[in-house]
Length: 113
Length: 114
View 1 (spheres, rainbow over the protein chains, first blue to last red):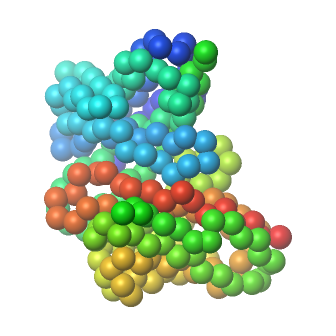
View 2 (cartoon, rainbow over the protein chains, first blue to last red):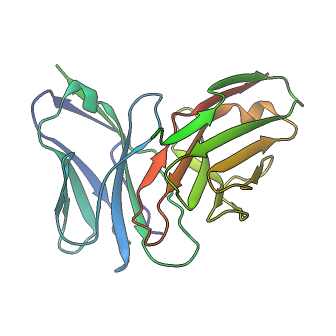
């Protein structure tokens, strides 16, 4: 699986958009980009994933660069409850028996009032 | 629909004691996982299972055993606990069939080994 690089921490003002970057310069053509978050002391929560097209759901938007070497998770209107560690993960989605996800250290996003 | 439930949520053990963590899911998921998380670290995969009766090793399997006798349950055992196994343990499960990469996690089990 491709390795990802994220900043260790970021700050964002409440009500503003939070843009969390992720670098995955060694990504392969069949690897997806996933984002999870972990609010303090809770289990991680799936946010969104994508292959090459931009994706949006009720939680966030995922913007993947054309060369797929980096991506940005966007929380359009951050709230205090969005304070969490955000994990960017790159993984092949395919058949077979290897369904593991590897979590790095992520980015601690702190939303300030 | 409770999702993924872990028991116990907290436990203190003495070195050398044994214990079992239970993970139960009510979503009919084929795949289940045990991760551990240490302070300042990401999650590390201990063992996982792709179906009833099957288990496989993850990144850090030493000192742990697992069993998947029933599809809805995934047990993590510590035969002889060590202080290095002090951690927060998370269980997760995911859909059968076409795997989307979406894992559903429990709330964690906090284990302290003295």
